[in-house]
Amino acid sequence: MSTTQIKEENTAFVPLIHDIMKSMERDNQEVQQELSRLKSRIQELRETVAVMPGIDLSPEEQHRRLQHLREQVHIKNQLLQKYKTLCIFDNSK
Image 1 (cartoon, helix red, strand yellow):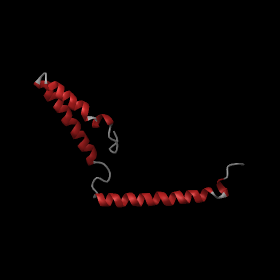
Image 2 (cartoon, rainbow, N blue to C red; image 1 turned 90 degrees about the vertical axis):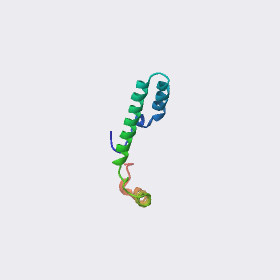
Image 3 (tube, rainbow, N blue to C red; image 1 turned 180 degrees about the vertical axis):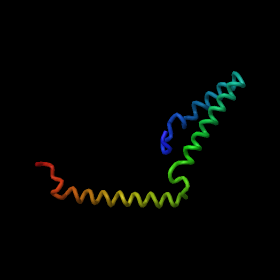
Image 4 (cartoon, one colour; image 1 turned 30 degrees about the horizontal axis):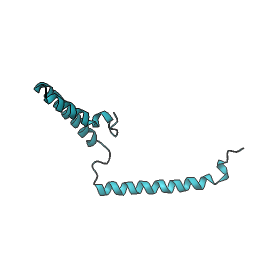
């Protein structure tokens, strides 16, 4: 799994919590196993989040970087539109 991708199965806690609640009615050993699975999934997510790019930045710095990237995309789109109007890229021949 890529560090920037979180598998959907790792974030689906509701079914796991439901299993824990069902097992509470039956056997204490089952509850412990289900709780252990839940703890493992939470730990996996913590590790994934800890290595995500930009997690060490403040929200303000993340916002500044996002704005900068949006400006770059806007400028590049303008340049692309400008170059499309030139005859160099005319493929009708």
